[in-house]
Image (tube, rainbow, N blue to C red; front, side):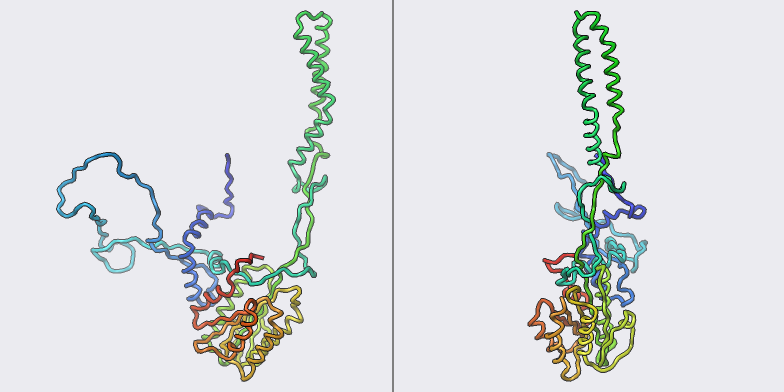
Length: 430
């Protein structure tokens, strides 16, 4: 039996199969290191690789050994220090000749922890493992140019790349059998007649003279059969494929960030980290998804990615302006019949006077019915603010499409993010 191993994507002296097995074995260590890295890194370094350290106690390899067998006796030299069952310590380490850090010592022993590097691709795989947009559904076909190739049988004309070898050889064999059937039948008769003459020792001389003619006819028939083409263009058959339109899981994500004066620089950085995680997740996991960035203070406006993360504009706080702008953009550009609509809003919850009540009304009467999933993140070390209390009623009435989470510090971002977008059991990759 032969095995073919494709290593074209592997670097020199590397095995991606063994590496994937290793990553699966130490998944929990890596996931813990990844979570710590996400919390500690700056915004610019959020998507690079990471150095993983595995404690020496966790890399122990099991091994087989031979047990004692039979009956024997051993004579040891005199020993007054140890008794049966005592553990003999390993030899003590050298006096500071190693390359490690720290002062020299005449006591102690140990082994270094195992350290290795994971790539950017592997790092992001662990960051976004088992995450998905909730409630993503396939929308109706409207101006969607997505097709899938579907096998539609066998045809007699096609390109060489679609040649069906099995069907072609089967047709060739059947054609050869049909074209040479009469010759094979005649050949069998002549060979039987010749064998009969050769077997009859009392055959007349005339019959023996007939053998020469029989041999000539048999030779001619064999040549005729051999001249039958082994493969003819008539025999060729090709796989046929047709394009079949399919529904597309088109989605749009609205990122809404509060940049009012009540939002401190630290609070804004927390919000930006959350949105960068969300942006990386969307671009990595979904081929076709639009992202709309909205910043707001007393007024809201749609901005570019760069302005969303780096603009320093600020002002008062009227959260409803952002919700109204989102509603307008949805009606103008993203029909709910064709798009899965998502939104993530980050704020400190501080809002102007009676505007939180307006936000709740807008959410209840307009937006909740348009979106697949709306998430509200309140970033504050204090008690919940007015916007949180207004949204609580929305969450109670729409628990599947509206979610709220509280973030106090940077370390809460990644756990909250995974909690919001954890893949549900009934959901799969679209």
